[in-house]
Length: 267
Image (cartoon, rainbow, N blue to C red):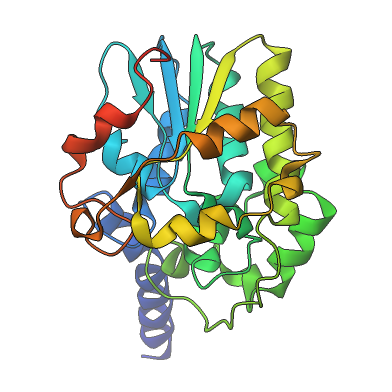
């Protein structure tokens, strides 16, 4: 009887930890699953003309569940910050050489310093893995270790569910975080080392962001790898739309209507 109880407990524990993995294969849905998809896609060999990387709005415009002959999207979430964008890009370039790379992000997201309520779910769970440790800067490690129970993020029951500890975001003081600045530079150096054309652009924004954009301290981007011309082009080409076009001040109600604002000459 004792042996049976021990076996039952062990079996139950194994089942609890493996269940999320099984469910994931059965279209189990959890916040951040789009990032898991982008990581998987980033490791495939694929001949494409344009690679798209970016936040959830970029994912609305170029859905990472779709692919055609010219555009391959790894866009997923701003929650992964430029650390995640860099890792997706590095993964992809290890097996592929696209003609161009388009990085789409809202300027408001540039202050993500892996210090948000989304960090545990959207960044730690998919990227806190040994294969990426060597790519983490000292600042990145510092921010990771500020997340409560960061070392438990890879337990299957946690990694493939919405379970996460509570976290109080840090006070934002900059328009551009140290981490995003560092990894933006890493992306640019990697792209230029392979002679790949690239462009950073903002998706159309709600008019509610105009005051923020007008007050953005662009000098914070000095040293990011972006040239002054690229910085000016990024901000000057932002299109502002009525708030009625958006679901939540950020995401579009009808994304297909706004692809026309992506620079067609580049694509």
